Image 1: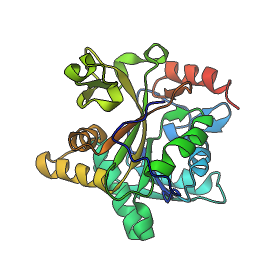
Image 2: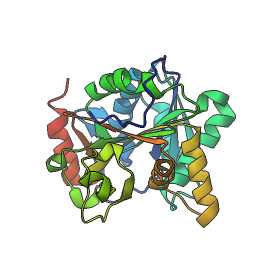
Image 3: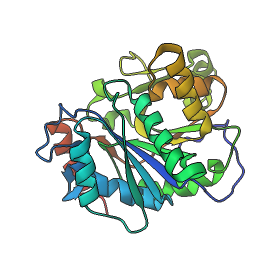
Image 4: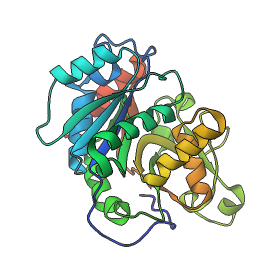
Length: 278
């Protein structure tokens, strides 16, 4: 499991009780009969149900689902759908859902700040169509959260990454991370080296972005700074900005599997791997 040398080694209870799920996109590649990726069933359970269970394992009590395309349809389905007694689910609409995903993150954070106050930050963040091994979240809580969860300085963001490159189902679509070549040549592990680049089109890379983040106040601030600078922002912008000042960490999910369920083929693969989880 990758643990950045820039991380804090202090242990303390995890106060992160909020999570944001990005569900604003069109989902046109998947063409799901259920109508929206968050409502897609894998192994007989919706993606929303799986997300709520996983965040429950991390101690989350508030979830903000950021909607965009077919906002009212999705919001109604969530309101009328399955519930988890210990988690309150709210929808936050992003009318600018055609922009990059950082705008949706900020829409979710701003809505949560207005409704649950200081509990809105820090927060967990994931994509509606990313499926994870549930057992990973217990390990995540044990190994990452106590070290980072209550810090207001130092690490301001964490990205779950995968170094099992041969297990990635659709590598061309994967968001890739490449680290400083000079540092790697000196024997520095990727997670301890400066980030060289992040993006889908990198010719050489060491890790893949699995689409699950822990976000401190600095993560949201980095998104706002990028948006103010160029009118748009994405999560990779926050990763770059935070890593440049030593405030970003990377956590490898190890043997656990995950899947971005964004095409019919990926959905079929997700059914296979989810069938092996308990």
